[in-house]
Amino acid sequence: MRGIMIVLLLASGVGPATAAELAAVGVLGNSGVAGHSLVRTAPYAPSRSLVGSAARTGNATGVAVDRDLTLWISGGDRLNRLALNGQLIESVPLAPAGSRIDSRTFVVHRGALYFLGRLPKGERALFRLPWAGPPAAAQVVAGARLPASRADHPPLLVDRPLRDSLGLVYEPDDTPGQTRIDLLDPDRGAWSTFATLPCDNPAGATVREDGIVFVGGRFPELTSKSAGHNTVSAIAALDPTGRMLRGFPVPSTFKGASPVQYRGDLSYADGALWELAWYGTIARRDRNAQPAPGNLSLGGPRYDLDYPSQLVNIAPGLVAITSAAPDSLHLARTGGSQPLEFVRRLGCLPDAASVGLSPNGWVVVGTPRGVRWWRWDDAPDSPTRGSSQLRLVTPGVFDGDRYFALARAGGLERPIPCVLEPDAAPVIGLWDRKQVPLDRQAVPMAEPVSLSVAPASAGTSDALAVDASQRQLWQTRFNWRAFRTGTPEWQAVRVEPPLTAPTDAVPLADGRALVADGSAVRLLARDRAGFRQEWSFHRWGPGPEEHFGPRLRLAVVGSVLLVSDTTRHRVVAIDWTTRQVLTQFGATDQPGRDLDCLDSPTLIAASGHRAVVFDSGNQRIVKLELSLR
Image (cartoon, rainbow, N blue to C red; front, top):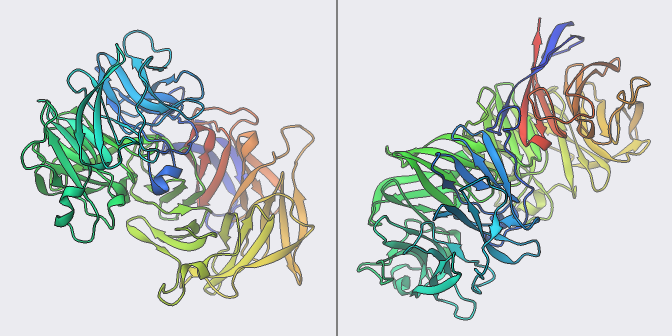
């Protein structure tokens, strides 16, 4: 950990000029530690094994536990092997290069790990990684050609071996409304049929220790028992010969607003049958699939599990749970009035469009999959303190526990305002929906990437936003008491000279604004036409390291401006009143993974003596602290 002694001229919120040290004090969102154990995952690619919003946010992943009690999950284009403390042990690539994992379940069979994936041109394939010997790459299983299934419902692996074979559950493309379970001997490449069910949209299958097979899907024969639905999500149970057990199928725990909202992934672990569905809901049944009253966990709103996919046993009373995208998994204890007590989040943060830090210690991160909340003092492997599926598109502003930002919602073409809190449902739009439709609340910006509000003055402040696609600065007034934008509505602002590549804007208490525009920080002052430039600052000396790169993000605390300089892998602290560079964190042009290094930092937020920066290359949030002396 590196700290640099500096003299800072700090205004409100930090204190008078004094000696200080700027240093990294920890990370959030990445369970690895400094060195080679940081967890990373490849950028997401569209996944056809999911539906709705989940299909746009990543590739599904299962989880497997080996004899060393280490965990294997998807890293997108690789397998990540994690220790139970969250550290990355190794990453194993896929062959051929360009293949991607897309498998809601992983299966361990005959000393090898099996999973489904896609080849570089998109064809589905079965992959195998032998656990004996040094792992070089996960290879396609030769001769294991997958049967043709419905394009919108790809085949699923039964999560445990079935009659000493791999089980594949799918709806054939030539016989809709039927579900087949086929068996594959991966060593011989021979397929055989285990069972055919009157079921569509098969969702998952799992095997009990005595060979009983549970299958989740939608069963038309139960239609009459469910008013308002064409089919019913249910669970079937088959004996080891493939015959349906008496009393099955039985309705699922989850009803949902419509059948498509139920996915019905099934896992048998810790002596119970688990149903995994949308919105992070997890239900525990007994070993005979009978309901266990009260044993329902709403994991998604709190624990970053918007779409759980597989649950496996690690030890008695301890399970691992994966979700729709390969950035994280969770460890949880079983038992109690709720079935799960989440204790650890293992993984990383592949992307972020919003980062915020509140004066009372909340850290909020908007990812492509939703919004995640932590506390400042949380450890790198801490479960999130709150979560929602809302897609933030800009940073925002805090008032206590409330966070105001712009978000994408539903099928709206343009973003709308929202207010979030850690343990509360987000407020989408800020007026009565019965009187003002959401589409009328949408902002006029096509691609807003920045939103910031000046400190409060008589209850109202200037709010500025940057539209990257239009290279335009927008402004409105912000009402702190109502905690929303007011009137007039958002208006485009003229800037002289015009902006060329704006990425961020921060309004100041005196009405001026600091704007990141390409490789320069510009101070703008108001005039009758909008804003005019007072100065532009892009270098502070003759050396090649003494100028900014082309992508900047900003945070201001008093007279200190923190500039996240993405391509030069650093955060630069400046006294913007004198344009004096005070210090920097991170080595110029030297990306690194240790705690005193950054790799392509982007979003940055600050409050008092603290700051957080999204270290995008290392897929983590780095906590920076200004220690006054």
